[in-house]
Length: 93
Ligand SMILES: [Zn+2]
Image (tube, rainbow, N blue to C red; front, side, top):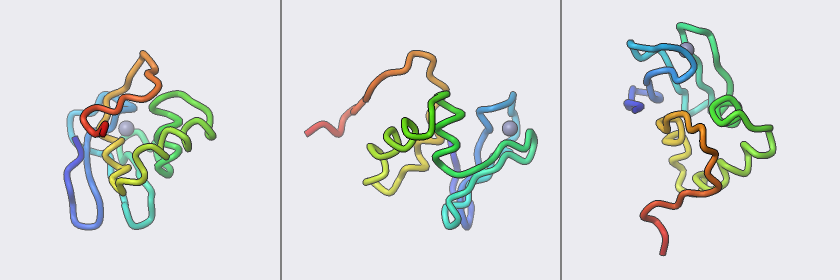
């Protein structure tokens, strides 16, 4: 879970065994970086790495959540091995 922190968010890095929140998200620059393992990039890069998908797929995935302007909440998702197509939980009207 990401926590709001001044200019952005901080949270546990999903790309290494993180016990201390080292993942920092800058929502103004649309960048994120883990200070422990050094992984970083933009939000699309995050989805690429997280879901192990190609760039266009990551863009498409983000498109679904982007309209809520809370696309960074995507970062709070835990790695999902079963690649579900689209889980619209709750907001299905
Ligand atoms: Zn890390």
